[in-house]
Image (cartoon, rainbow over all chains, first blue to last red; front, side):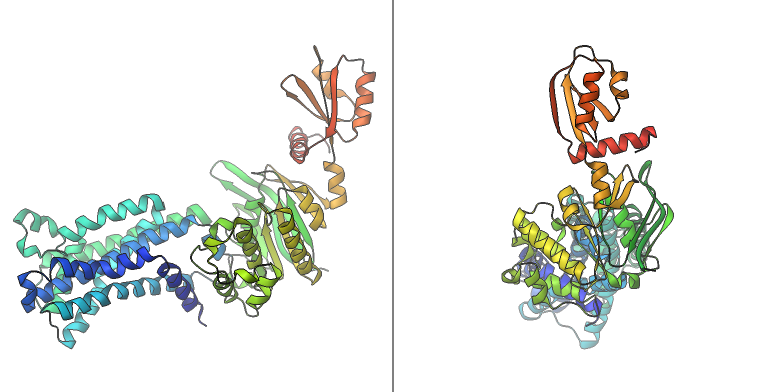
Length: 246
Length: 301
């Protein structure tokens, strides 16, 4: 079997046996939809319901990226298993590929229940073309959180990474318009929201899946976030290599 | 000529201002069983980390199977032990073995590995549910899964009871008898004696001694002579023939010597006043202290 698949298989096994990790990534977005959207009127209006589901997919992806990478890597770095793996006759590629595959699996695990609740519990509808566009945009939307997660995982201890992710996560989700649409924000919050990566990610995904005109400033800032977090991730990775393995 | 599986040439390693390894030369010939002995901080782990490619030397060079250890293909013939605390707690024992086996072209069958290390009935257990001793055995077993030519075992039996230790020793001996090469570290002189043919003593990042077990034992087999004295002449004590190290332990004056009887005879002849004389075999730690002290003052061993 391909080594990258072997790494992915065991990383998924390792993670899936921690029930809390599965519950938080798989159930939380679906439950949010169930409690915060389904009971209200706008769940029966197709455009606003689809928008609500689209927002929550960004929420779900942001959560899996920050938790699998931010906390997962920070924990891994503290175990002596990690240096042991480096003594096996495999380069870094299968491990990194395996890690991305694991992230993708947990991302899907979070999206499937959410989409099911959206499809059966609300008036949300989507054409096949828009669905594909939505999935594609979601992969791009994931980038700053993927890189941000890597930066956190490679630069902080597990003890620090957990509160940092938790502190960053909720304000980003709320102020980025992932739980409530920015249209109902007070104007100061709407303005502040534009500089957050979560807002840009939301604009992108809602644009792709619903067709709502995006806020261009938010998209521009979002692109800058991708560049900045990618830089941070590379910096943190190199710094960690330097401290532990040079 | 025997093939050299691993080699350090003038290898030094600094961590900031701390010199962990200082110009060390080491050859690991095929078929040998070498014990690295030294107190904590002597540089044993650093040397191993350099040889298996976890760290780069600050200066000097290291080779594994004739090439740089950082090159993954050079590690094909290497088997190493993870530290026990590091096993992934949610994976089952057989899964961990399978995972490691997937890295090698011709690994041992899982059942065989587990049987050899007395873990057959634990195959379906998560590693987090194993006792400390079982985790340790699994960790050591992983070094042999890929049928390596060179097994590097960092303190393989730390924390094991006597029975489990013997089981591991047997497994290591079997591997060696079948032509395998072993490089191991230990805190225990007894373990090195039981397993190693050649011993390398490290202290303060340097090689203090390198020789057969018998030779090293000769150097390390020291006795401690201690006594009380009201007004001892320290310089005279140090000058006693046969005394290799002196230290003060509370009210007691402690001397080390290869030949305790001779030292006592010399002490009496010197006419110095003493009482509460006590003679006992020096601990390994004391022997190391003596070795490192002589090294620092430049005296011959």
